[in-house]
Image 1: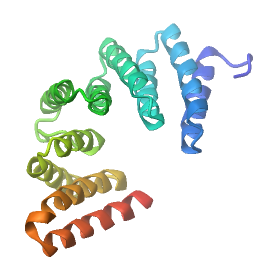
Image 2: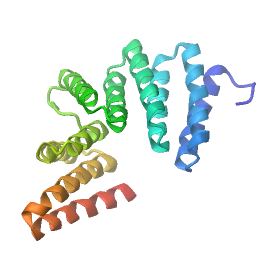
Image 3: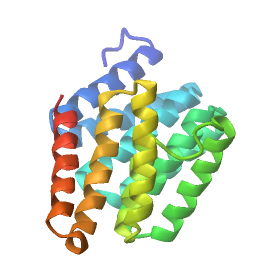
Length: 212
């Protein structure tokens, strides 16, 4: 960023640049931009934006296939979120770390973090006792990987019902539909042709929602 910008403005510009570069597929450049913006936020003691940036950096590293770096950034995001005291960031960044640990092969640690986040979810929103939206999708991804497709289907079905009743965004609905499709695909071998038809219906719906 140009030197005439304030430190706060530099951080904002770098975060936005990182977001846009990621969308363009320029992942290495996006990671550098987010890293510098994160360092500025930490220096400014802007813990909420720092936690957000660290979480985004972890997700970006996963997209690059740099799993160890993703885990490291996710741990930093949790630490910063806890220091900030922001309830949403504390919950969300735990699922970011859990997802990174899942991809690193540490399924036990990932499951424990998802359950910790879900406990926070129940305390903050008692009417929604399950993780939902992106956080719920990440947990269901772990469950499917462990062969717990029935539980993943149950959770995604409930989350989808909440999403449709609450007028949630297209991404949330598409992610729940994708989980249902993946679960149906696993079960299709035992169910026969009808199972594949259900899986196809859900997966087509997920693709449609994700493309909008």
